[in-house]
Image (cartoon, rainbow, N blue to C red; front, top):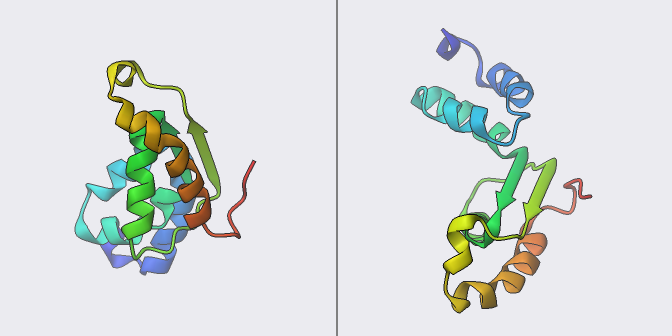
Length: 113
């Protein structure tokens, strides 16, 4: 049914739907190709990153994507997740660099706390 709606209307609806930390956006991306494309920008409005691995992975994504992200809320928790407590020192050495790189890659228009 939603594939009959104009993508602009779907995108507006998805902006309201994707105000959680990411569960709704991930679910929308799996519905169909049309919904995946129409919800793409909304999926990155609210981002929660926990631990160095997620921070590093998201920084890599932002650096290599062609998507113009419109992030409104970005929460970064630099404390390790339980699984990361036993990770290598290489990840630890890259963490501060990735924080700075991620901040530089995000749009200046993004709201930051």
